[in-house]
Structures are given as structure tokens and as C-alpha cells.
Amino acid sequence: MFSFLALVSIILFSSVAVVLLKLVFRNNNVVLRLDIRFLMACMLLILLRMFIPIESPITNNIPVYKIYPDVYIFLRDVSLVNIFGFSISILELIMLIWLTGAVIALAMLAKSYMGLIRSVHRCPELEDERICKIASKVNEEYGKKYSFKLVKEEAASIPFVCGIIKPVIVMPELELTDKEAYFILKHEMLHYYRGDTLIKVLCEILKAVYWWNPFMYMLSDLVSNMQEINVDFKIVEGLSDLYQLEYSQCLVRVAKTQQHKRTESRWRVSFKKESPSSTHKRINLMLRNMEVNRKKTVASILLSVVILSLVVLCPNVIVFEPYSIPEELIDASAGGRDGGIWGVDNKDGTYDIYLNGSYYKTTSKAEMSDENIKIYDSLDDIE
Image (cartoon, rainbow, N blue to C red; front, side):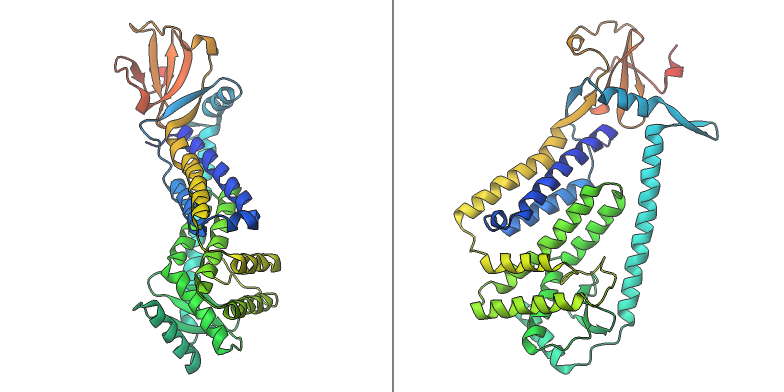
């Protein structure tokens, strides 16, 4: 069931989880002690939870007695504007602005994505037989049957893959050695096979829906960085020290090329535009990466449990609910069930409960266990 209070709880706990992951990611030593796959899974879990802001039927409401009740009642009850005879509260206006902004952001997002797809498909196909053979070799190594279309784009600053159903790899005007071409194509195809293109789209949709929330932008950046590191680790897995250095040199060369060109990078997965310090971080992590051992897995599991609790358990069992009566009276007998207690439907999944004519508390519909309480559509309906 959806309710405003449940949404606030989900956003709050998810934001805390994002900040925790941000702090973890800032420390290279901490990242190396964790299994990179668990970190990625934690980020995707937050991403998924934000797409499903639904209250659990087992929610345990935690009463808040100060500030929050006054703010909530003020936002909900104070009418700000009147349109066509309908009064709109501050809370409803905020939700309307959020919805309007989300619709506009999603429309711009769709336009941007379709524009990139059209632009990519207008690019001339890559006619370099040497690069095409390397691409076929890499695809055979993955044992996949997908057919990647290779195109060239003079304005592109970096190689990238786009498209979910029909993948296209865009190559910039850059003279590449066989080894560099091999690493770049392997990198791009691995992004596609790991579902990174789809995840990138979901991140952009999430930012459009929660356009006002800076933590969602932070989460999107974390996911993007983790996709790069995840692919880096996979590519150098089992390679000799010399080949690992050659791959690092390839990253550095591409990073240098980016400094001279500026292009739209919203949809471009892999070899993304990043600062020299970010490229250095990737190379440092890649070269220092250790095989997953028991301690590494245990630490990752512990972090995953914390994130799981923040993202799944806490919002499902804890909803901070505003109470406007003194705490010491909460446990007192409600009484007056012959007409002294009633409820008003807020139309957002919650009821306002009134006791003997005074506001008592706001509760979710899932928690309304007493069927004898009369529910009205508005205060005006109460006789």
C-alpha cells in the first residue's frame, strides 16, 4: 500500500544507505577488503527499492511527538491555492510540483535517449577490417550470439556501447593498436552482457522521478563507477602482470583523449568521461585487487546485511508517524466508541483519528483493526 509517510520513510533510509556506500567507496582500502560484486548488489537493491515505494502490511509505526506532527499537519491542512473551487494544501501542491517535474524530466529523458539512438544509427559503419575481426574474436571468447554493430563517430570522445535490444559500439576517431582495440571492445561487450546498459537506463529514470533528491544522483554516480570497476576487475582476472599494465595504459590513453573533446555522456556506458583522479582510482583498485577470500566475503556479507536492513527491513517495519497529543496520554483508554471516536480519510492511504472532537493521531489503513470506527470523507461530513 502506498502512503506519504511510508514514502518519506523509504527515502530517508535509502538516503542513509547511499551515504554509507559513498563513504565506503571513498576509501580504496575498504573497497579492496570487500567483494566488489556485493557492493554492486547493494547499490542495485537501493535502486530497486526506490522504484517500489510501497508500505508493508507489517509496518510498525513509530510515534514522533515534536516538530514532525506540527510540520505534517501544517503541510496537509493549510490551503495554499484554490483552483476551480478545489482547495489545494501545501502538501498536495508539493506532490503536484514533484509529479509535474517528474513528467517533464521523463519526457526530456525519452527525447534524449531517442535522439542518441537516432544519432548512433546515422553514423557510418566501421569499415576497418582489422577492428571488425578483433570484435568477432572477442565475441567468440564470450560465447555469445549477439551481433554488435560497429560504427564510427568523429565527435565521440570515448568508445561506448548503447542500445538494449540491438547493441551498437561507437568508436571514436582514434588510432588503436590491436591490443588496445581488443581491450576496448572486450570492455564494451562485457558491459552489455552484464546488463549495464539497462541498469544505466534505470538510473536515469530514477533521477528523473526523484529529480529533487541529490542522493539519487549520488547513487547513479556510484552505480556508474562500480560498473567500471566491476568490468575492470573481470577483464584483468587471470591476466599476466604485463597485460594488466597494458590494459591500464589503454585506460590512461582513452582518459587523455577525453580531455580534448566534450560530448553528451548521459547514456554512454563504459569508458565514461571522468577526472584523472577517478581514472587513477580505477587503475589503483584494479592492480591491487586480491582474490576473493573468506574474510573478504564475510566483510561484504556484513555490509550487505546493513544495507538490506536500511533499504528493505527498516522501511517495511518502521514508519515515523506524527502524533499531536502528549506522549503520556498515548496509552490511555481511547473510550467513546459509541460516537466519540471517528476517522477522516486523507485519500493518501492514511486516516486521521479524532477522539471526542480532538485530533488523536494519523494511522495507515493497514493498521485500522477496529471496524467499528466510523470513517468520513472529510471533517465537513461529521454531524
